[in-house]
Image 1 (cartoon, rainbow, N blue to C red):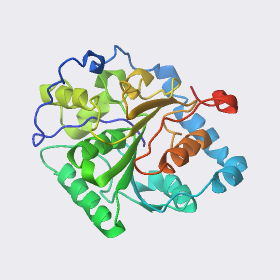
Image 2 (spheres, rainbow, N blue to C red):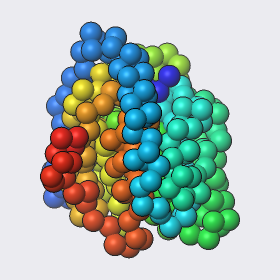
Image 3 (cartoon, rainbow, N blue to C red):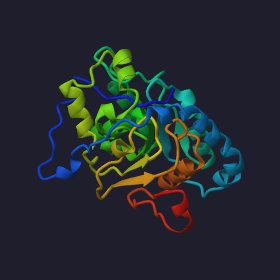
Length: 277
């Protein structure tokens, strides 16, 4: 199950907004329609089936520079959910890695997930000989942003897929998260950390992919405040289908292919306007 989740840890200091950055405030948003949420699974299957006719195009995209990429799954999901992402990344020439932390149950006081992820990131950096790109789906995207903030020297770029960087109640899984994690989303530390994720990551480009038809996470909280190294890319996709949607895979390939230190926003013109906004 590839759903949203929320970041919590007592080890991270409380976030304090940068002065003069009122644009970092959370947007007002409500959870997507529950009726639409019931259609998430069949929509995701449809998107996965679209990979067959798009396979030739995706496979033959211009290759990358073979740098390391780590995928992070969403709430309750494991590395199995991101296999398609890694398969295409390898076809594009990248060294794609799992997160290797089992099922993603979020952060808690009982399990130092952030410490384990930091060790994994540094290990990949040292063994690959270069910075690592992070691609996180839903909760995985929040973890990726937090990793990049703690370790900017190891991270080349971050790509988030439908990640809830705002009010947890603007998702359809916040009650399930409370049940599974034992953490109340109204906890001041949870709120503070989620707000902190809206702050730009110093020197690390972040591409937030969102969908207005996402029935798990409100698209309003899946977008980030604009910045010099921040972009929001709208795609027509379900939440559960983001890791299989050909249009999303095309964007990921384009973002990973950029030369390190020469980041530029994704261009939406011509035929791309049919798929992106």
